[in-house]
Image (cartoon, rainbow, N blue to C red; front, side, top):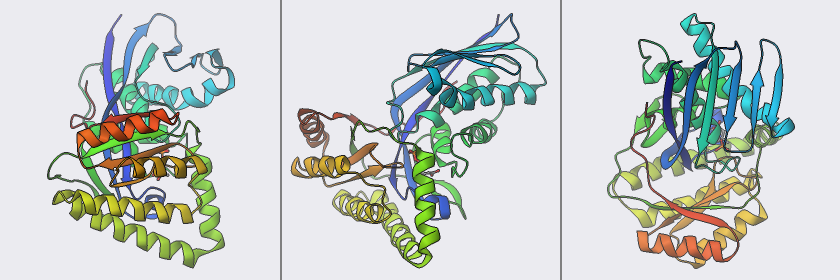
Amino acid sequence: MTKGRASAPAKVILFGEHFVVYGSPAILASINRRIVVDARTIAENKVVIRSDIGVAGEYGSSSFKATEGGMEAKATLDPLHNAITQVLVARGKKKGIEIAISSSVLPGIGLGSSAAACVATVAAVNSLFQKKPSRQKICELAIKSERLIHKNSSGADCYVSTFGGLIYYSKARGFKEIKSKGALALVIASTGVRHSTGDLVAGVKKLKDRNESLFQSLAKQAADICAQAHGAIASGKCDKLGELMNENQAVLRQIGVSHYKVDDLIDICGKAGALGAKITGAGGGGAVIALAASRQDGGKIASRARAAGYESFEVEIDRKGLVI
Ligand code: PMV
């Protein structure tokens, strides 16, 4: 039996979600919450997936059996099964594989847990064999698998999870690392409302199809905000960055991806001293990200959100990305 392990970080989208699907830029950061995948070869010719997130199952050559989590298991595990199969095909191997997933990432609220799981799965299964693929190759396979969850994925989640750090992404120019001046004191608060990224992306497409000129004008605003945010991060202007987060949130509200609990959380964060706050990721509930002036302020914001009944924690930007 051969064993391998890989871990990949969750992420936040600081600016540009949704519009990134249509070519606008986005700013993302990987965060210090990880998904760990342990892989091993097994004697039986099947794929077994276990996890600590309430879903588990077994895949035969053309069958699936949920061993935990019922219907939800298949939707969550299919991309990972696809990732494993892709690695085996690329390697020309026919082997039974078991993976075990341990997660410190809340699922379904926009923190990129599925992308991180795909990246770590591709890397862990690859590590069972000789000759390691490049990070770029791992990222490409993970993006293909993640597209099973939502087919219009920009791929930005998998990229930031693979390479780590703070990233400026645009379709035209690809991914560019942003060197930030000073640390960002970030707080995440969850509305507790799980979302389907695919459904929200489809909803935004409907709005775009109905009113292309409105959508284009909002996309332009979001792109301008993103470009200014790039400058504010690079020059360490946190007050400006907070204002830009609020402006981005106003644009996101107009495309219908906010939620009354998001508004409540943003209000709580603002009253607790946040410089700015917005949805991070697809919205429709999900998580809110707030920027604080200092770590101490960040702690205050998180505890106010918790006192109001929301799960909330401070995060740091992860610089490592995928670890094998
Ligand atoms: O995976 P989430 O829920 O963080 O959202 C992804 C961000 C979107 O811009 C809405 C979609 C995408 O593929 O970039």
